[in-house]
Length: 290
Image (cartoon, rainbow, N blue to C red; front, side):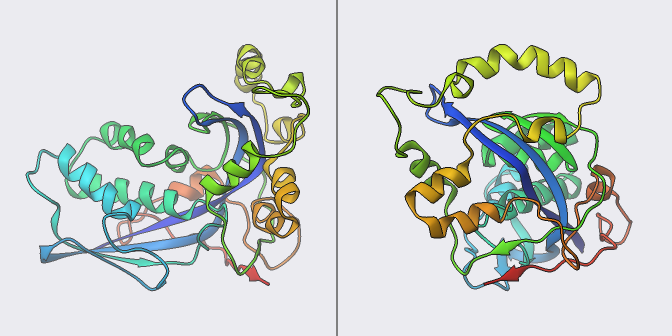
């Protein structure tokens, strides 16, 4: 039996810089691990692959990223047919469609577990991550990380100090695709791609600044250096579409309080133990709902 923990993330900042030629959005974001986590338990059981979850809203078929991770690693291991002889139990604690990366983190944790189980090289397993989602590569880093382009070009930052976090999660979810579609339809002045965004928000300019950013990273930049640079963030856009949706996006922001899930370091994200594959965070986690 193997048991792995999939930690949630928040975005300390999230700036949408424009639309890329490939149809995705150019992002500048700072990711941060928090102690809130899902748990995946994998057991060897003869028969077809099976996935169960204690959340009835979570799909347990081929559309689930854990299932897709199994298919990719099975193929990378040179095995024929569909994956089999395993059952996977997902204990879901990360709210879905809340901007906390639960599905992506589950996928990354499953990739690492299947890679060890089927003896696939770690670099090859990691190379699978982008095919499962733009956020999945981050969960192979953990801690405090700057994400550029689709959010999948990653630059580890100096880990933020441990702090307490309040997560405000409404009773409804927002699909990431829908949130970005609202951003595309937001009111803007003028016409044409990038019109009304201001020069600092055009897609080309962040690329010209990338060299300077890399030099800052080499000098030991911190998350705070990247959080307050100017461009409209996704929560502003959602509030233009519907004020009620702002709650969901703001769930990914840090608010300091007490008795809430703390941020965790890159080391805590990955420290292992023989019993579980990933050491449990020795910190409590709780999510508030309204």
